[in-house]
Image (cartoon, rainbow over all chains, first blue to last red; front, side, top):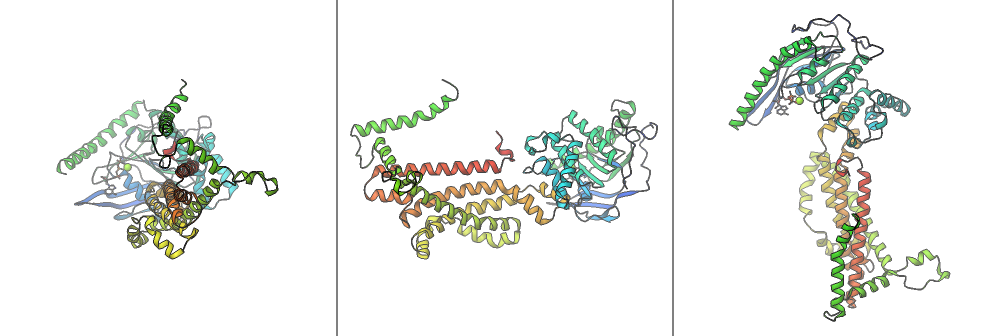
Length: 296
Length: 272
Ligand SMILES: Nc1ncnc2c1ncn2[C@@H]1O[C@H](COP(=O)(O)OP(=O)(O)OP(=O)(O)O)[C@@H](O)[C@H]1O
Ligand SMILES: [Mg+2]
């Protein structure tokens, strides 16, 4: 049932390009045949003292099965709000979201979530964290053992299996959080700035690992970031949001071959274009925040 | 001097100086020994209090039991027993109530006002009522100690449950956990640092209350013994008893703190 987005190179374990390298373009994403996550006419309004914040306005977004989509935008533009709505943590004020045709009403193991703050249970060891979802699912002891061992291996965590999260580096913690979500084999993986707190080298190695896992599992990934570079490196498709109200400014398909070379001309051309889009929103963000500061 | 011994030497310097001055003052006859006995007299009395009352007699049983037949160890065991039973009663009631109050706003709103009214009443103020209700003996002592342990455990349990970081609950929900599972496997462990620190305060309070309770309701235990010593003007025994109370308190606190460290070995605050 899972569609592999790219064949995997047996040696590098990386996805290899299916099509010959194409020039990057800012053309709108073409519609696909297998919609997985469908967001229709979603508004999200937060009441705040003395008014309201329109965090999302008229969001229409269809994400196809197996797609890697980045939500990109400056701080406060509603990326987390949209992701949380897909996860089922909060309900849209208007409109609706379906995953696999089913309306999202609450969080569930079919939509694994990776948080920027890791959200590992600090009182559980690495192995216990990974096993948690499987125990809830009612899987047998032996099967859990085997699955956990496999995930520890996959994320290079085997020697850390009995450590507590406090004794791990940020990168290691995020590997555990990813393993915990992978354990459930959910078709959708939602990630909210998962690598935002990591140093550049750790970040790149986790990005590569994520791409490898994605290529191997064919999951649909919705990945929030405010790093333009990261979104181009990872995504099939980049959705740029505007700042207040959060609307979809652009929906861009990234046609660069994988593995992507962040030093290449095509990569940087795309980066320049996206930069112009995001910077405009960043300026609006700064304007609003400054006004907020002076009138408060 | 070596780096490990230096802080030790620094720590002992002042107490030793105090002891020396105290002893010199007594030897020189500057203080009335009825008011303040010399350290040597206190030490001798402490040893007599600790040692078995009778010489060892193999006909009367094991050597081991004989070793622990001194008055002090009996008193310490009696006090410890009351602390443990009273604490278990108090904490045993406070923990479930605190968990309910922490998780349910409805229960909290109904019960919290009553708790806030009762909480400032010091356990000591319950002494007359406890004697009226339970007479003399262990029962009123356990009652008072339970009250002393109840509120710290209750307050900390409520705070612990309420302070659970919402992100753990969100993570658990997205992994498919039911409300019951979240309570058992997320809220409860996340609240343990608070609960255990409440338990530690509760045991400390229980230890204060046991001494007072023993002065009024029973005829053994460390608190009873120092009051008894006063009636005979044995000031050396009073001080020996006080030192024993201090030592037992320290031992209990060290034990609880080691248990806490073990239970909270996952906790960030306890690194190093
Ligand atoms: N619970 C809330 N109550 C009020 N306003 C909120 C709430 N949550 C979010 N907002 C507002 O909604 C807007 C979008 O917030 P959101 O967290 O989705 O932004 P974001 O794009 O994820 O930003 P960041 O990159 O900083 O995480 C912001 O302006 C924020 O202030
Ligand atoms: Mg966010």
